Length: 425
Image (tube, rainbow, N blue to C red; front, top):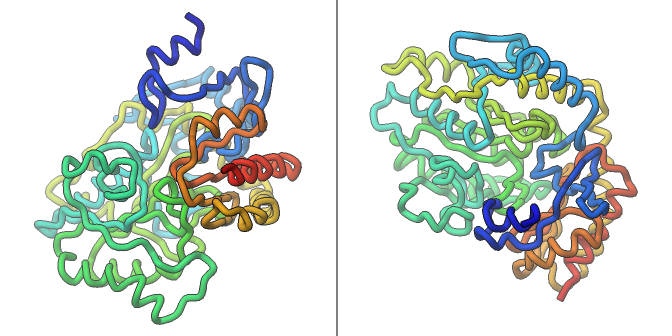
């Protein structure tokens, strides 16, 4: 049995039936934006391998940092021990985050970062008996672990099949005003009235409100108005609800700002980071809290945050993250993202005239073509090898999040492939 045959018989792939994952492409190497396949052909990784490889694949600075760390200390438990990569990464994060967000908990993955954020909020609110619920907006996505799943969209989300097994949560309508649209008093009333009503009725039971700032990712790839976040911050303050931002997909430059919350000038009580944190080299994440949250936990009946992953603070991952953040600090990521945004706006513009297209959205290094009907995933994946561009749509959404190092010519290939798919009948 060859490798692909064994894969189909024994390996599960994400969101695919066991034994029938659709067309598979065997990748043997990767460099920059390019994936090399077993047959010698190549594809541009227009997905940044699910949004994490911001610097492209196998960046020499990241490889060198991990190789050097591998020679010294690949892993050691974080309980009762520490090491220079963890401290160095902490210094970098505190230096780049808004003042007040400076209590860092290292995690294994983005979903775990969300779980930790919810635990933080619940423990910090223990001084208020009964504050154990969480609220969010429809259309969101926060990961595949159990508690995180419960806060994804309950009707249109990919976890709706679990139904009541996830437990009830409080959902309000998605922010109604698009990024870049006008904002006025009617917008504020319509966009935040449901949150105000929820807090007025049930705020005494809500520990935290979690939201993806500005960009709703896998739940719909929608971009909402930053002013909505400012109103949400005010309502959370008034009702003593902790505000949690999930920037796992948007952090580290993807929207044109280092963090999406900078579009609104709003700082949460708890922040979730991941994906591009290590430049896509290794799974790692962080949950960052304010001193207020950390002190509330320390003063509560359970002063120890009840979480401790085996690979928490993994030195190899910390070294990769330090190198990735150093690349951002000294590189021209802003100019790169501005160039990608301009290229996507120009290159995808013809999609507006295609009969099967419902909407076109671009923000930073994110391009989205929303179709009127769901795409045939198998057909798209089969086409990717022919087009030389790797794309992974879901439902009606055909989108790209290319690495920041993508050139203009490579971006043209991505746009051409997306337009071809969007024009299928």
